[in-house]
Image 1 (cartoon, rainbow, N blue to C red):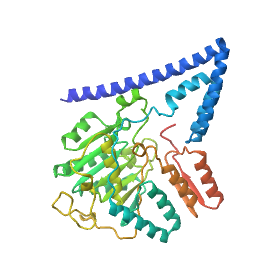
Image 2: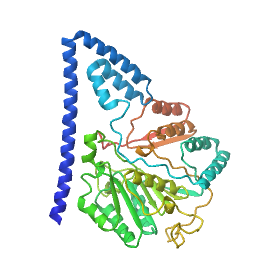
Image 3: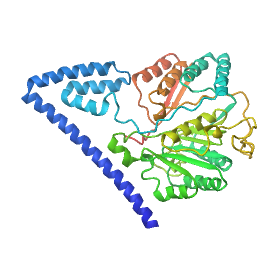
Length: 428
């Protein structure tokens, strides 16, 4: 059995390695062919090359008028002006109107809106506008993009992985109905062993457990035996965009970087922390690892569950119950399809419904939102609304001019702007 599992893991990695090598060779052949074609036309067919230059100019004008990133447009225009024939061929291959990296995710109808939740969101918006017009404008913008505003929600911030994992594992231990986990990295090690031990116990007690993890993020960090152990424990697992499937279709770098955990629809976790030992500084990869997370308790946790449900279905998987089954009832009502009252959450064993003081409005980006990606616009509004302090901690700072300018304007206006980035980056 172990020999067969080792062979399966080796075959998967060899398949991925061969696909990557073929992709690199294919790209090199495409670039070499287009460059040689450009040189040949320049030397042997002057009139044809002149026509290509004119076509490249027209193509450059079309690209300039397209919406999207200025750096993206500038790069293509420079390439078109430098090597017209090669630039047009490469643009049609990699940067055309129909993007080559569209994922073959299943198209699913939108979730049926909960009319009570929609009405409550409007009421919450009016209440938030009364407290803070600035936050009310931001919330209204997100509501326009179908992100509901929730009340009766509290949040707890975790400045590092140590406290985050301790809290997450304790909440997993208290799960009564279901657990959703969606992570880019799910790596074998001390953290995963503790999480998996508790997941096995909850699965044995009848708790439904669903996990999505990114294949590329775990290609060399999560083995097939560990995957099989999860499945043998009754845990439902799905890989996002398997590497050996994605490369031939040109979306190898189209990954799922979301980090979501939901327990019983009452508690949700998100942030920058993956399920790996370096995030708790149990191992050292790039010096001291600084990532943060947040726990959401209350009505707002449902939206994270809805994000997971939509992604699970887009990966062509199904649930044994209707969507509403996974919505928590914070008012002690009974579960849909379940005769037992819904469990409420607190570390002592009961989860108390939050008070009415907190608002929460989860929103998402990525494949599930195509073509609407609101996160950059939200960051710009947050930066422009800063009045006293603006502190940003990020592993990567690679922004467009608009974001850079907004930060500079805030600093020039007297806002205390501070940007914390790694001294040792994990991507050179």
